[in-house]
Length: 151
Image 1: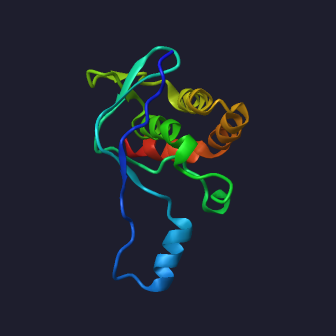
Image 2: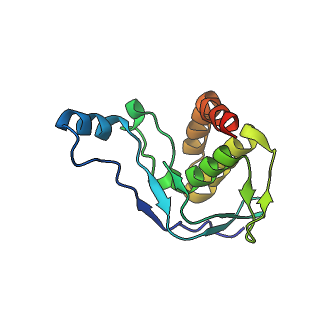
Image 3: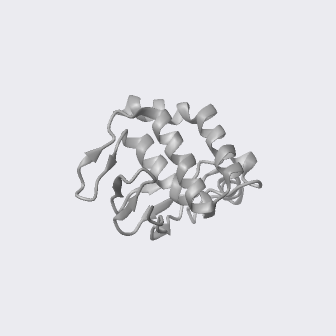
């Protein structure tokens, strides 16, 4: 299996200069990081499927609740898995390298399992993959249903 490359991203600044100090502090503590993909990101999934996330896609990495961010960050080892997972949750499919929809209709469980597989492949840490997967299996339905209603 091919190595899963790091995507080139930039952080999107969510702070507003004119906000009061308490609003900025609240945002710092509670509002998740926001990243934007600088270039199309092509990756070969663990099952050999070639997938692509288009440049300009904005995501928050792994969606770690604010009260658990001391334990894990939204970037670092979870970033690549979070990018694929967030795109799959938001649109309900991935794109192939030609930009055509693939894996449409696979559902939440598929994207949760892909999240776990990517973490295992990129970190070699089964315990981290299991811990993160448990979080998305227990609470991911909230985001997944929200995005399905928006569509």
